[in-house]
Amino acid sequence: MDHAKATRREPTVAERVIWDRLRHGQLGFKFRRQHAMGGFIVDFVCRERYLAVELDGGQHADDVVYDAQRTEFLQGMGFRVLRFWNNEVSERLEDVLAEIAVKLSDALPPHPNPLPRRSRGRGSRERMQRAMDAAASKDPAIESDDGVVPQNPVIESEPTIDSRELDATANTSSQPPAKASPLPQAPLGGEGWGEGAASQSAAAKGFRGGPRGNLHLRARLYALIRDFFAARHVLEVETPILSRAGNTDANIESFTTQFSGHRDAGPPLRWLRTSPEFPLKRLLAAGVGDCYELGRVFRNGEAGRRHNPEFTMLEWYRVGWDHRALLAETCDLVGAALALVGRSAAIAPYSYGELFREYLALDPFTADEAALAAPLAEFSITPDGLVRDDWLDLLITHCIQPQFPRERITLIYDYPASQCALARIRRDTPPVAERFELYLGPYELANGYHELNDAAEQRARFERDNARRRERGLAEVPLDENLLDVLDRMPRCAGVALGVERLLMCLAGTDDIREVLAYAFAEA
Image 1 (cartoon, rainbow, N blue to C red):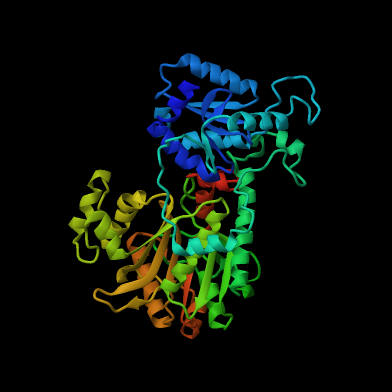
Image 2: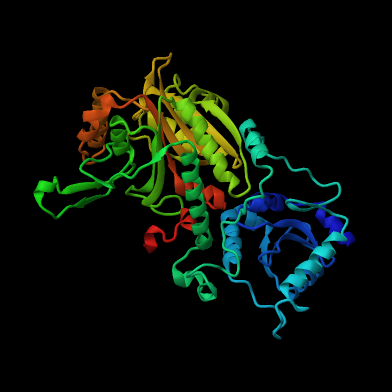
């Protein structure tokens, strides 16, 4: 035990990195770190799923006998043991986490003793669990919510909590804690999820990693979203997926299809929506009031770890609000979603100018293109055809966004007027577009506007989009005349679109969008 105590006080950098991703149930189950079991210290253990994770290459490098004895003990207790070198964590953290997630979602192994047991007999898992709890209680370590913490522990910093989160915590303190698991319990319950289904491999079913449990997480998130808006009297609506008009944005490519019915039904060329924005605004102009839609949207051109051509978007509108008021509500929704998995996040708001000055010591409104391109030199970006706004976007995606802490909500508001899209322009010096983006860690989750309701100005912007498409050799997109016909009647409002898969990725602790889909694009 002296060796175990010494080991516990000396965590490696790799252990700190991986603990930051395992703690607070981010993979769906509670892990304990530096946990005492049978006279050994286990780096990370999930007792609920009988999984131990060991890191080597640091303090245990010369203690092969100790490691072998510990592994033998764990396997004798029915635990699966995953071992990684410290440099594996540093070089391929996401792959390591993916392997852990797969093991968590696998069916539990049989009891190491092949003889049949009564459910509550001497060899039952319940009895072993009680025995391990008793053994742990004799250790001088202190039990905490995150596992076993040593006497004289290394103190880990926690993210700052926004005052609204403290209020929310106070209001729910009498409630039992929510189950934070985005992975299924064993045995799996419910029709179609019994022992027969559990015994089939994930690969045979086309599932990747742990999506089966993430289906449950998605369902819980949908329920939370609907409860969130019902409590605020925001109406859920459903609008068409196919339209005679498309998205003119030169950076977004749409899917199209052909209608084979009678020509009286309208033009045969139809566009799959990239967002429900245009029909929702038509409903606002018709007097529907505050409304939202939770549905599928489609964007052509990218598929892989970060993008799926078909995904879910949540979009909502608040009549009489500006972008700053809606930004606060968006934070509230993301905070409520984080609470599903037992997490919270600090909130860091920046104006667009403040962001660039803090992270790059640049003024994005006055710096010339050469100054904007300089921090991107290491990326060897071909400058042909790039304009000022392109350089600004690249600085955010390549230099600023990757620096955002994972446990922080970053807000950016008041963009350059040249990036107005469908937002109002405020005549400051310099003029700014009244829009915002919300990031959770390094991921952009939401994009919102103080909405423009000037049809003539909106038509001019659509036409500028098509001019840029022509310059890039892209096909022009028909304008949404139905929207333009009523836009002047739309009340003053603010609207925001939030990518549901991106939010689910953050909740499930994965950087691969395929892990939160039942079937990814390649498997559909």
